[in-house]
Length: 141
Figure 1 (cartoon, rainbow, N blue to C red):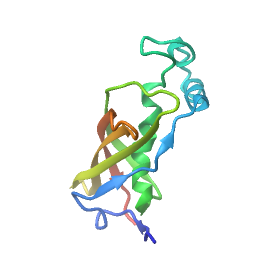
Figure 2: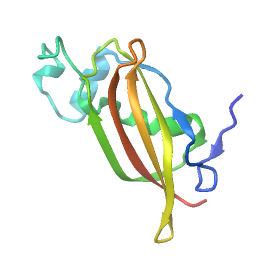
Figure 3: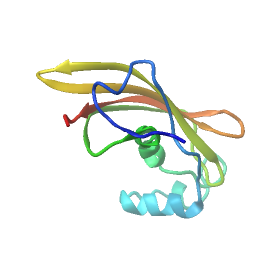
């Protein structure tokens, strides 16, 4: 059984590995996200140069943030910075997973931060779809 600790500056450790749940991208996920961000590009609904519809590049952005929730209770936080590199398009039917590592934690002006690097891959082929890093402010207890 996994024990969930509350996320804190003291609990997170540089080098700690995180992993998301797997996610099967469904056609309705692609449609819903396109409408949610008010981006109705035809590539999300019809043919694209990549062979069929593709997902909005940021569809899986939250999956990287959710990795922490598989290990910690995360009451709140503040996204200080996010960087993404979109490598391959995401398509319906892909089973994807995000893996990451805490690469830094630091204090600045009395506030605590953690930096996580991540990669999102297609589970069957191992192909990297997206990579990046995010900096999260950790609120004190």
